[in-house]
Length: 198
Image 1 (cartoon, rainbow, N blue to C red):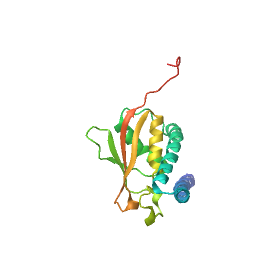
Image 2 (image 1 turned 45 degrees about the vertical axis):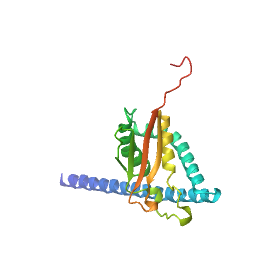
Image 3 (image 1 turned 90 degrees about the horizontal axis):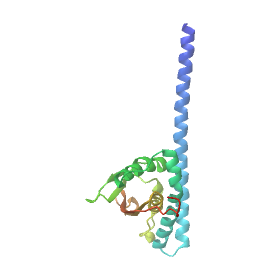
Image 4 (image 1 turned 90 degrees about the vertical axis):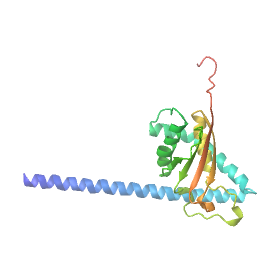
């Protein structure tokens, strides 16, 4: 009986060690994937800066790329999160902050600075994984380095019938204490179904 208990305890301890090791390996994989993404994104922005004459054009291209990503990413998000339709803009903001940002970037921005009408808010990112290892050169002072995020939010929300305006209000790369993304609800987009599909 004592031998059986020792064997069971040893197996249980071994299982705990393997589980702990598996979790550490998964955390390392996420960190490596995050670093690879950060470096790849940096290379993309660098190439755009070489291809276009000014920062405003680069900002537009980053937003456009982000929009295209958001249009496709929303399907993955809805499938993986099993979240249903949000009832209002406030609930949408909470889902974006607590689920989407956590799922794809490993961070949870705070939702704050609501307008009195409840149609505008700020997402405050204490840390932005896209800007790890980044310093903006002096000749790119108007570059919105992480503008891809604005496009992703706009594209994804448009696919769930929400038109929004998204822009950076503050950025740690420009010397601000935090990164702030300002998001304004414009309107709910009506679904246009073909005749007979109603």
